[in-house]
Image 1 (tube, rainbow, N blue to C red):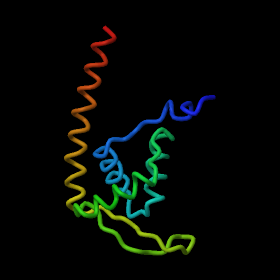
Image 2 (cartoon, rainbow, N blue to C red):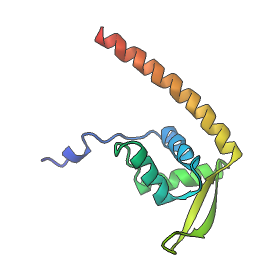
Image 3 (cartoon, rainbow, N blue to C red):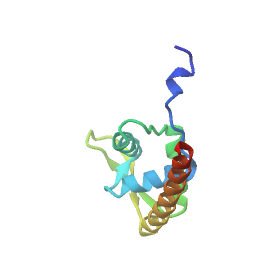
Length: 117
């Protein structure tokens, strides 16, 4: 197996897509960073894996845009962690992102169907 082999099926997320997935994950309630990454991984049937080097800069960016807010709390294992929660501005952004995403998916599907014909 070559070094590139493990990455063959890896899907790289564009910045806006990652933001949308984080906001969607926070719809289920406040979570810490590890919980968000796990939620995305599990909900995507292990296809999407968010690296910490992408996740935390995205969370900080979302916080600066006031789409999420954070608070330090204790986890179930009594460790201190920053929990993130979607804000009303974040919910508005998620709706707009979701609409754009649906348009993009339809457009890509149309192009791909054209190729099969």
